[in-house]
Image (cartoon, helix red, strand yellow):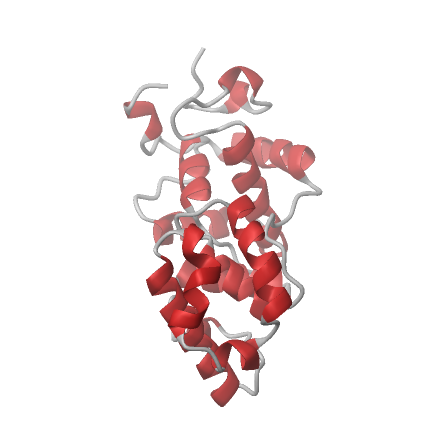
Length: 219
């Protein structure tokens, strides 16, 4: 895959886009988030920790962390310095500790320990951007939302499903293409395809089930 091929490509026609989506659905239809959690609040913590950190490492961290501190009230009672030793292997841990404790205190004080199911309220929490908010809405609450992370951004544009220079543009284009009820599922199809096949540096085009339809596929 050349450098040029990793950039946005011209979208394929609607029929091919639907065929690509059908292939992804069939291939990854039972896939969901790899992050472990037992509540929406725990999911929020895990997603914040996952920034610039892989999900397996996050799960290694959150196992003992959630055994000690299970909910928003418990996290709200912490100082960031108390949280730092638990999450130091996740990268950017000082900022993440500050954001997680700050978010927990808002959720505890303003929302009675319940994570709000509202994008604007979520994005007002420390450390929560649009992508994280969409993950919480989709995975945590089962609401229609399509989070665009680095995998989704890369794969959607390579496959010609979108031509977005920013995650926001890609989200808008994918939401216009994909039925609303499939937004959350499609997020996972694209993520898992990015992890298993359509890697950033060495995509496995020879193993891709959608290669014959992909405008970026390398022979």
